[in-house]
Image (cartoon, rainbow, N blue to C red):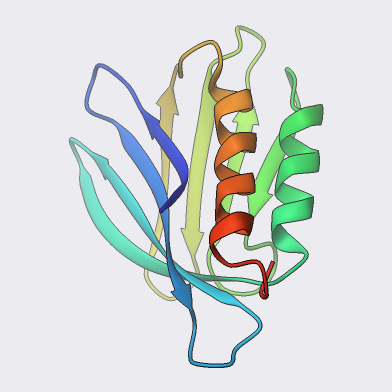
Length: 130
């Protein structure tokens, strides 16, 4: 299930696909981060803890020019969406062990509402974790 799905007409894409609990009985979720552009095609891992979805949704709802929403924070992979003045996004993926890259993209107008719905869907599918 895609928590994040951003793509543009140039072929740039960033997806955070939640695949389920990190292990049976775990209180966190495992997700694949898929990043592709003309210069990169990568699949990285990130673990989401129970409060991460709350922080993600709150940051999305406050996102505006000059503001950021992030997943991962200071534990391994860090995905940052930074909104530019023209409402386009600078998407940065930093995995300290493997990759740092940035993509520029202009998502659909309703992408924030769509991504808040995606977070709610993740909560519905895995209610004991989220």
